[in-house]
Image 1 (spheres, helix red, strand yellow):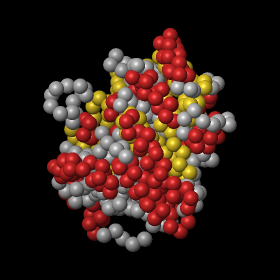
Image 2 (cartoon, helix red, strand yellow):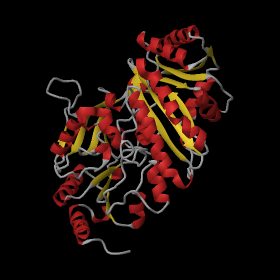
Image 3 (cartoon, rainbow, N blue to C red):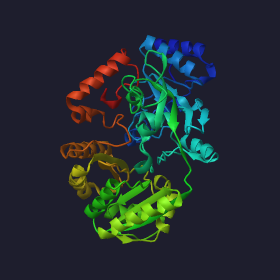
Image 4 (cartoon, one colour):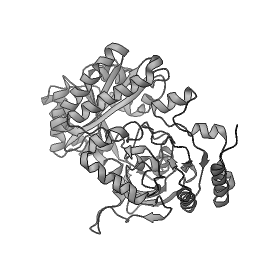
Length: 474
């Protein structure tokens, strides 16, 4: 292996003086590991021996003060900094395309405080989601943010990607659960946002950093809203004759004030080929899984009202054990044999829209990918699993069994066609996976003239452009 350039060698020496020298790694295997996250193009490129980006050094700080020192050094040297949590992001948000420093936050893994009176937890950015949930459950509490990535993801990653979990219809997305943040700015100053998100002391700065994907600073800790583990969870499953009456029933339920924690509405193909294999049932139609939770009389009353609305929409009520089985196996979707592997091409075409536009977005995406079904054997399996008073999210999982020699070009063309269709139909190009590298070049079209305001915020906070360059289209 050739010696690093003098500038990188000097950087490494300076980092080893600022933090524990053992926390500064140039081990080739460690650099290779940090060259990709769960983005398909990054995985494929690394497997081919041509990573999309490779860091010059990986630093694993153990405190906010060490992060501040590292960022100050990087800013002085105009060296890129890429924060990395569990590496579970699917959009390339942690890929170091410009080299530089990968800031591995795994050692910031302390749960700092649990306030059982206010029902909050303060945790460092590197705390693993599953570990946090297990420790809270021992106290009878939960962080009602149950993403599919919880096994790998971290608190900082939850915040950085503006993530969501399966209970979001009742409890909201991560931006609804964050009270305050600790952040190291791109010039190396630790700051704290206000301790509560509801105030009239100026703009809500916390929300600026949620979803910023490391481009505006490094999230070091978060104070998050908790809930008590529910006394009762009631699962139900229904099948609608088509998507349209299913949408109408869910929309009416939410308009009436019902608060199901789970509503997962699968289209016909996803019912048959995604849900069915995981729960080991032969299913058809538009299968919809429901969960109601809380005190038993309230949860049961909500369930009965919802089932009444579903029956009016032509639904058939299925065995309730189906929903419980899905809950027990909800993470199985993301492991073999249900999760694809190379040489397959895969991804999630995700969009969110108001109810008035949701069906148009669904149909537009279906039409956009239909040529790939004929030419490449693509299967788009779609469900709707995050519902709001104003609309919902479409989650279209696609797999091409073998992309062949033109897999990258095929992947990019498919994504461009799908996102163009989403925007043309009046949707927003995602709900909770973030933007990263994958969608960055669509940000101008998504935001229009307002994108210039994002650029100005980036330039003001990060004048030397060191923080996670190339992400969010910035």
